Length: 138
Image 1 (cartoon, one colour):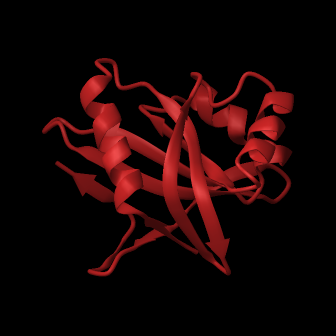
Image 2 (tube, helix red, strand yellow; image 1 turned 180 degrees about the vertical axis):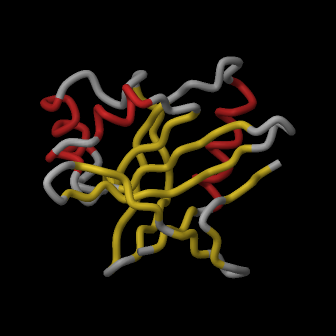
């Protein structure tokens, strides 16, 4: 599996990093999937922890015409990750975003899988230039 981030999605994530002083925001990834490829077209910042209830999450999926691919989180802790390791999130994409000591965003993509329990499986980025398992942006 691979993930492609549109320029719009990358710009929005970069803008969030600049305007949020604590950089602990969460949100949804909007786009489409073809085969084993996730195409993230844009992002939607949401409440901390992605969604307040499963009912709200289902409503968001419907609002975005079933184009919710998954989640992103800046500085995700285990509590936030555990929230999405659930049946409703099976097969969804998760982008873990950290800010390194140089102030750069380090984005790592995962897919939420299940085999006796839910867990994250690392996947790669696809770009016109190269394949990566993480993306470092200035």
